[in-house]
Amino acid sequence: MKILAAIAQTRIQFGSLTANLAITRARMQAAARLHAHWIVFPELWLHGYDLKHFSEHARGTPAALQEIAALAADYQLTVWGTVLQSEGDNLYNSLVTITPQGEIRYRYRKTHLFRPLREDSWLQAGGELAPVFTHQGISIGPAICYDLRFPELFRAQMLAGAQCVVLPAQWSRPRLEHWQTLLRARAIENQTFVIGVNAVGLTGKETLTGSSAIISPRGQVLAQASLEEEALLTAELDFDALLAWRTDFPVLKDRRGDLYG
Image (cartoon, rainbow, N blue to C red; front, top):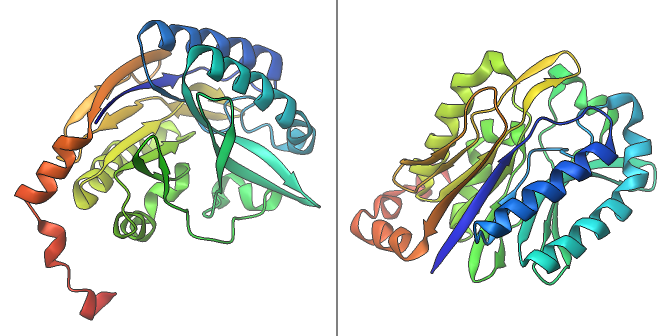
């Protein structure tokens, strides 16, 4: 099976749902013109890390997702990105999947909260391992930004059958080399596709590093956006080739689970 995936590296308009929805509509329309099957947006792409107004943004999430779901059905696209969702008194940074049928599914709540940005002061961490789920016949491992630094999560997903990791982020410029290196490392060590989508510009006082990428299970960079410019790039994900690589180079069969789990 082959999937044409699009990465939408955007300049998030800080705190403005209206402006970011307009950007979303334009990117989805452009992706449909390219005949993409999937489109992945950055972390919290509808408002950015507008921490002081997180509760207000969470209240706007349901209506925004319904509008995007209608567009997904019109354009026959799968849409990924993270949004703020509330449950009781808690707020969560949640990765959602919006299907070409206009369904909002497969929620994953970010489990590793970024303390340097005080994310843990505003949000509740998810309490379960990121669940692998099947979408269009492909096993997907969801992850969000800071999760990238924790290889245990991705190895657990691979062992649960993940063939592709979808990872929206807002990753800052001082740690650019970490972003680029870890995306490739997660793909190589788990023999999976990795789709890492970052934003550009400022979020509060932080300059984001762009450099969104799609990485193959062999560690090849299939698509790479620039550091500073918005971009809509596509790459073909060949899942038959993934299975062939795992067969030809079955490194994961040599794991010593008896020693380290």
